[in-house]
Length: 463
Ligand code: ATP
Ligand code: MN
Image (cartoon, rainbow, N blue to C red; front, side, top):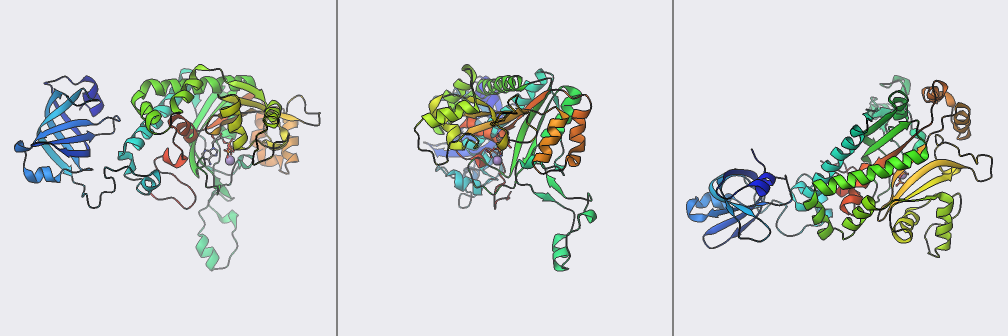
């Protein structure tokens, strides 16, 4: 059966049609009732015109905002502005009513904070409808981009015992009856646990993606990741989706090239396939949405080194909250200054100090200098700051072993990861993109909790 998007686009006056959906609004005219019916297929609703004398009064009363209906009727040209076609109802079936006394989504505008408390219903609003359609289009475009280029989608484990160099605080996974142990006053013995050792929800699929890249050359993950970071920010979730491509025979420049091509592709795809939703964000959420998207698509990303970034920040005479000094990590305010104010476009910062980056990032040739750097890159965008973090990986066995030791870890714990360097090692690179950060940037939504249907954040795991 055609959806409302099809009727609005292809419907011709005098066609018979059936439309099903939920009532967004109801308006009374002279002897007629006007309904806006939405089925989630697009932002626009289909206007239903019901001649009151053709319908039972009781039935008409049942129809209020939130009710679900099937309408049969005739399509007619619409006189109302903003719509080409509407449906003249001949038969209306009410599936479910929605008591206006209690149904939370009434006509007035609701705050996003309030809508988070009714996350099971918020997808029926214009904003969340648009967000989740764009999220869907992004997901599809991501797979399309990689599949067109011969990348293999690999599934990396959710339960893991490696902590990916502490990319974030981890959630423990256990089969032990902890309350029982506590009551009995017993210590936790992980050898008695399900896996015989401590396990966690993964914070990143990178290490396993590297395994797969050294067999398939080009792979990507697209999966949930979990971080128990107790930071109540507008850009952190406890459960979020990550995209992590990993490429063998690829250096940092190749990595940056792919990341730039990737972002351009995703934005072009979404602009082409969700023009109505994107126009809505531009008009109702942020007037930076379209300019940002155009910049991503049309402008070459600025590439600078970390050292250059520090110089720019120091010369800027801005009063930042956090200090700018070679060897310290860039904070969000610094990242945003670079992308928003200084370059006014996406910026790729490369070659970070080794001391602030992960052990697996490849040491640069300046390793012997007093300011050694690693082949890391972050992509910064206006409004958000970091959206992508990536690196060329250390492929030299001895160097990698030494770095693991230097951070106080035991190389034996990384035996299989080191085997990749022991057998057929190859230069390789990859990056991680937080999917919700991408959707946030694309839609202009201020809070990351509003771009995932069921957000998980400190003290919030409802729905
Ligand atoms: P940040 O400094 O913003 O916390 P990070 O350095 O911890 O990010 P990475 O470990 O490099 O991030 O993870 C790769 C990408 O995953 C980031 O660029 C970001 O887009 C996303 N990301 C990281 N943490 C979160 C989170 N808690 N919620 C949503 N997305 C996240
Ligand atoms: Mn983090």
